[in-house]
Image 1 (cartoon, rainbow, N blue to C red):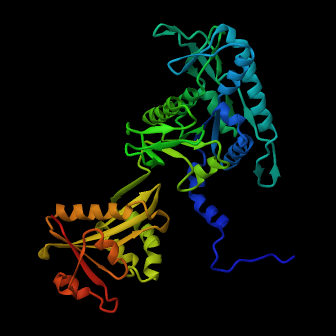
Image 2 (image 1 turned 60 degrees about the horizontal axis):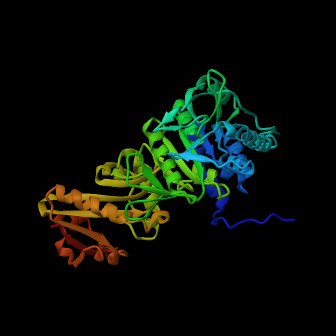
Image 3 (image 1 turned 90 degrees about the vertical axis):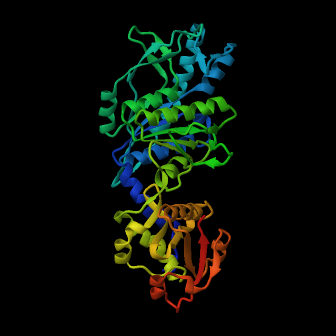
Length: 444
């Protein structure tokens, strides 16, 4: 059977994805990632594939700690025993009578997790071998005690983390698996919150990433717009997931706190979505919500390191005749005139600003937004910044020369004008073969 071939100019989506993911593969290699998997995720149909994706991450050199919870499994065990669960302040009150049923439920989930991991065989060059994973007494607990008059009994907090032991296993290439039961120094067993364990581990291990699986997470700003990125210092943001808004916002609070304590990035992803983990880590836009201690997307002054990104961005527009061709040397020599929008290290938009002080005018040129990111008001952001730059220089008129974007600029306050209105210096470099039209905007 003859193998089907694609035309030379056809783009294979798999090849495109692999090429685009290479920078992420290199960036994540050797980094520590803590993953929090709730009991609902373990009950979900994609549980095994999420573990398979974790195994794939490890073959790419990522060091993974997996923390799993058992809330629905514990609730079912208590319900079967006729015991009503007690809660206070968002925490489970773990009673003495709960403990046998709770331990059985956790052990059952542990068997499910470990049995699934045991049959995974990540593909390794030249051979296939079982995934190596370890569990151990890496946590020492202490009781919460009595808070606000409530005795939390066997509900506890982390007293100590064996970071040295965990790092030893990670460096050996093993997956470290941790549940939320931990002993105290005197031998009592305490029930801890798995989400808090994950946060504390990420901080203690100086983790590059902390990942929480949720059920269809959505975050909104004050105007109700969906967000895929949240700065750690933004307070007025609500998260919705599952049907428990209070529980969902506890994830958001933990994520922000983790960033403030040194975790670089926290990701909230949907366990109902197959492949969500890989999409989040190895694609530019991810699949979930990112909370970061640094800017994920920002508008800034361009630097010499951005020249190649600008060239790659404007080349398709130059080929279509929308923009005037610009050489690398020209952009390098005028890089101080450029502003860019950078998204996770990729230049996705740019614009150039040149002042003609003698004419009290400024030119906006080379305005370009990547086709993948149009419709997000990035052109307006660039225009607003250029206007601010012109005003800061005391200029009162902004002009553009365009062949195909006249309506876009007219909708934003630009009016047609005769070419004689161009500054003398700009008239000398005007190319009549392009027949560009002049539009001006008065800056109040």
